[in-house]
Image (cartoon, rainbow, N blue to C red; front, top):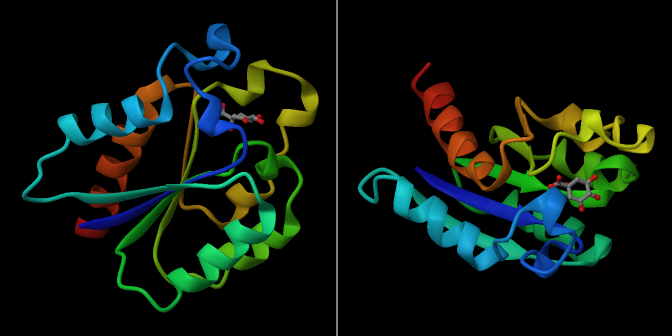
Length: 145
Ligand code: DQA
């Protein structure tokens, strides 16, 4: 199962950024943790990060012509603001899992609206670094039917 893992703005700063909320791990450490938990005979995850809304839209558009089985996306703050990313996600025919490290519903009210999650089949929020791992498992289950 080939899964593209797209991470949005400021997630390149994990490890130093608001550790009480997002935990002590860098994005690369979360990637390595997720890979170590998943069976390599079943899962192949490709990780990518950008701070730019336009780069994220371009990358999602490119996904429409690629052969991934699913997308895991943590759009970070763009989840709360970007109709443009929602529209791009709606062009995808593959299932989408939206991941947030923190439980956005226990935080400021502006984080309670997840625009991009309207294109997702699955939402994971508040599972910390394990969110990506559980999202991959859930997407595999969804594929099995
Ligand atoms: C986040 C939650 C967002 O509200 C925030 O802007 C982020 C990270 C999370 O993973 O918990 O940058 O997506």
